[in-house]
Length: 167
Image (cartoon, helix red, strand yellow):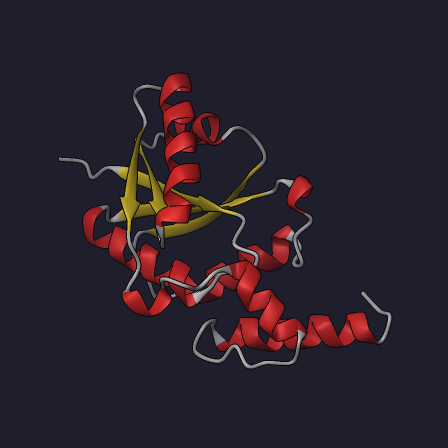
């Protein structure tokens, strides 16, 4: 029997240990996964699409069955083109649920054959978000243990460049 391919989509700006936790949990259920990085420029990410993909490739380098890709279309259209049947989403709190529930229902309306599976992270990551990580790093706080060492270095460098007027 062929295993089901699942897609874990997101902006991942940056990829946190909470994202990593959800991916590891999903791999226990779906041994074939695509981490799909959204190329949506409307979100004005701190890191370029290529940098975000580099970060994730580094994080998953020892994981079997995972590949990293980018998409610039409706999620369900991307999922179909990849031959996947499941979308993975993480839920940290009730505040996440309302948005994710709306998105899952819209995706179902567009493509009834694609299911959304919600996973909860380890309790240590229930408060963790990319936005919060960036804010802490911007203000000079430590993000050690919240992101990989690569992301920690890249955040420091990016904010150092911004303070000096470079990009």
